[in-house]
Length: 189
Image (cartoon, rainbow, N blue to C red; front, side, top):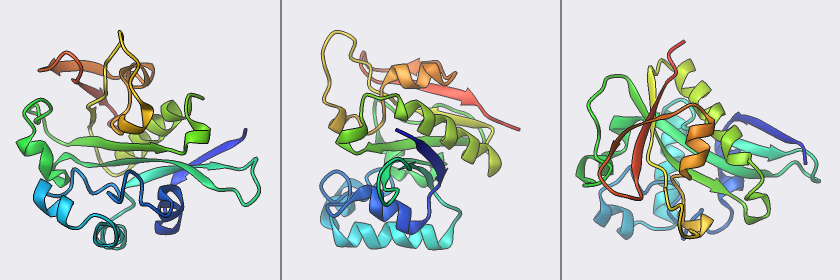
């Protein structure tokens, strides 16, 4: 397997999400919208909203391209943006923001099932940190799943797993739940 990591274009992102738009039509808008609005626009409306984000801003993420496969398909995605862009963080009890300035947040990992459990998420997270730093971030924050005593289905771990963040040099800064630490890494160039 030969993987290329690159800043995502809209076409890359759309390919990575597949026909269903990631997890059931979310199109990675879960944290960007209030819950009722997110639920009301599952599918095509979320897709249109994310396309608008791609058109108005620098790319909000990185894709993984498998260059060993015919057609070089996009097989993974990670979203990173200024923390303020993720409005649901403000109302999240367990992962609400920890004070800090110039903090960016990783909100979503998405890997095709064929490419899970191969270390790809670590590369995506490192590339997301580089992308954030190139756009002026001082810190990148993450909210991974930490379930060391039970197996957690990867499809539901869209914020990533703790080990991925630790391998990329993140440190825990707060924990309000046994299974959801908040981690941060300095990325300022």
